[in-house]
Amino acid sequence: MTKDDRKRIDEALHRAEAGTSSRIAVRIVPDTTLDAFERAKAEFLAGGMHAHPGANAALILVAPKARTFAVLGDRALHERVGQPFWDGIVEQMTTAFKTSTPTDAIVLGIDRLGDALHEHFTQAAP
Image (tube, one colour):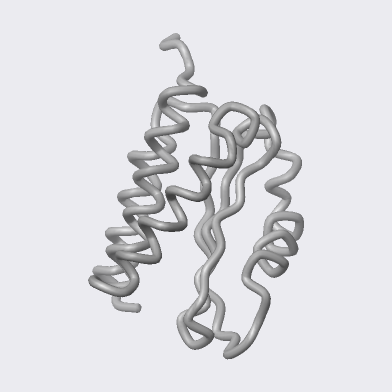
């Protein structure tokens, strides 16, 4: 991943989280084989995201060498968006991974999460 790729991801994270009470993390792991969802759950816990106030954090885990990824959201986020949201984001990211760059797919996932966060977890201005 290049410096420009990291910058695009950081900018997408900033846009997605801005004005919300939520947090999104992206983990890119070097594993060649893994259960992406189980690894995402472990990373979610290890990163303390399960303790984020509001239970509305999300994580995107990508394992390029294993050609797999997972998207995971905490309890309050899942309760608001429901399973069809997660199915849709995985479907859209899968298509993007096949037809575009990994960075484009990750940014797409972040943007979709950001849309949900802004809809459900926007903070009032001080």
